[in-house]
Image (cartoon, rainbow, N blue to C red; front, side, top):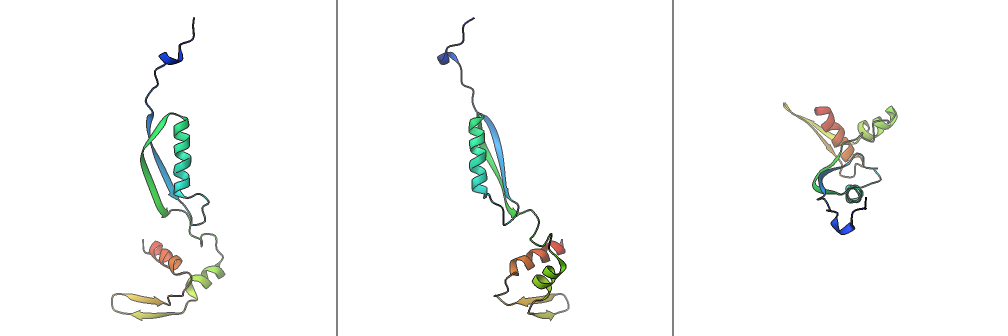
Length: 114
C-alpha cells in the first residue's frame, strides 16, 4: 500500500478553543499578556484557534496578609494615623494620602464586609 501524497491530504480546520487568563497575586511572574502568548503558541502547535478570551484581572489569590504575623497585621492595618468620625449610620475613617497600605486596607475592609 502506498503512502498518501502530501497534496492529497486534506488539512482540517482548526478546532475552536477558548482561553482563560488571570492574575492571582500582585507578585505573579507572568502577566495576562504573557499567558495569552503562551496559550496561543500551544494552540497553534495543536491545530487550535482561540476564538474567545476570558480575562480575570482581579487578584483572585491570597492577599499579602494571608500568611502575615499578628505584629505585621497590627502595624499595617491597626496602627494608623487616621481621623475617625462617627455618625448615626456610618463610621468614617479618613487616612492621610501618604498612608502606604491604603489599597491593602481597602481590600481587607471590602473582604470583611462581604
